[in-house]
Image (cartoon, rainbow, N blue to C red):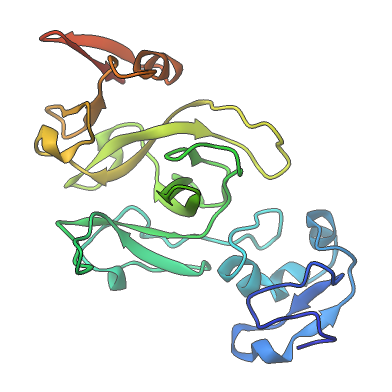
Length: 250
């Protein structure tokens, strides 16, 4: 569109040097400004650049918090929902009611409002949450593997106990917790990643080798391969229940 540097409004040619400034309603009328490579330091130093490109950075490329103003996730991340229309997107590209769907695309039970995309390092495992992903206070960026090699990154409501979640949801363990920005090359987990999600009513609501405790929280078995190590890594305790040990978190 501008000097051949844009192929549509949702991608940047990596061979081009510079930024695209404009607004969402006039994406075909971008102003091309030569700031050199698309680099966070230059983004921060150039006046008005971050504000001018906020919709493009947030809505197309995901959250980039080195910029001011930073992208903001919607306030209703973590709210109970029954339909995606109830979930805002904030500055981001999409909001979605996250939950279990049937083959017709109908939500089974209640879901949780999420929004995306956001920042997670490339090499953290499925189910991990990055609290420095730009999702705002009390939220984190979840790395969710839809199918092998196909990841989504979206904002979720993080928690330490059920008291941090809405009625009807519970503080569920999903994986490792990270606290890292894009400058970290070898991120290390800092604890347990927990998010407000659907409360369980029975063991069948949880994954394989897991149980539903009295608080509606799924607890995994320490007897599965690597279960005891993972439990220790996240600060949990393996507790015996009729011959099977389950990981309990404080």
